[in-house]
Image (tube, rainbow over all chains, first blue to last red; front, side, top):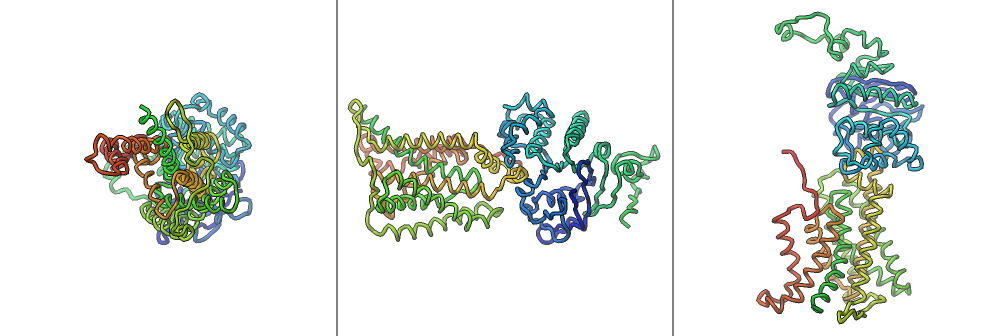
Length: 260
Length: 296
């Protein structure tokens, strides 16, 4: 189990971004982490995968543990060795490399299983097998996202951290990515899914967390979150009443009862 | 015709040395975006190591291999002590630090060299073959062959090996490289080690035709027009840039005194920089460099 307890993260010694976040990702599950821009979702992922250093961030309190062992002092490559791989937001494929070269870089710490890894990824993403010699920068957005996810799988991680895999993709592709996440999870990889597309994330996750301004404000099974009126309103885009007038919208104040 | 061919061979030979130096610049620039001004010092340090190892009785190939290893170690040390703490700081600051490193290494090496001219004992001397009336010095042939071997090895390394791929990946996107489990520090150290070894090799060849003294480092500055002509971030460009500089120098040296004596003595020393200026006018990022795409 990947567990985060009471985590506090400060950037540049002054900007407090995470203010005591606790979260747990049980093995074999899909856990969704929702929140608006700036809520601290990406920072949380950086804290897990050891990327805070290069962003001048620092864990000032709390722990990140994997099966009881502390991770927060380890460098990014060590954390990949422990079986946690992050797929960064915005795809970030090596644009000048071919598809296969991208995947080979993903297997940097797992060179012995390169063949098996490639086979697994090409099995999951047949389109990448067709494009294996193509330059990654010329792939479509959806294909690049698949490549980024496939590259993350090349280290054969026990935990895959996905940062907004649906970002900037058409609804059809979002559904495809969603099915792929389920398939990856079905192969035994635990997934921590960070999303703004709450419908998609809560549709496949067992458990969900909602973050706001550096805190976890809701923590419940996905079904409960789907049924929650606040989540429906703010994240799923569903409204109780129809035909709200502009004046209502203007004077509408968001009920933040969970923060009070 | 004989004159032309002889000039070409000499130019390609010397050009190979410039290309080896330029490769060192390019490898460091590609992985760290830093122009390493300590490359001349690494070259002289390598050449000095060959002299000392040769005097200690080692055969020439062993002395060169030893000097390459020492220069690689020196590169590693510089990276670890002077540059690793500066990761993430402005590239300009790091480049200035390499100038300081260059001075430090050169002062130490000058002490070892003393004020005398030193020779590198080598198997070629000034021997030459006679190919249909054209005298080809053996050392030039050795330089060209060495460059070809080094370039082939480097190409294969960057293209097919796990570590080479990691170096290129780090150059493209450090954060993504980290998430793939690549240790960015190790790749930086490695690129400095490779650059050091290449500089030592270049220093050895510089020492085959002439003696090594406290002014030898100036030759390494010829690599600057080479990398700017070829493009700072292109391995192929470094090779071609180096060869172009060598050939231009040789051709100007051969023909300018006859055809354009009004340009004065030793104009061949200036000629690479003239070409450099022309290239900068037409292609500011070099012949094979990547134009920087920037949103403003």
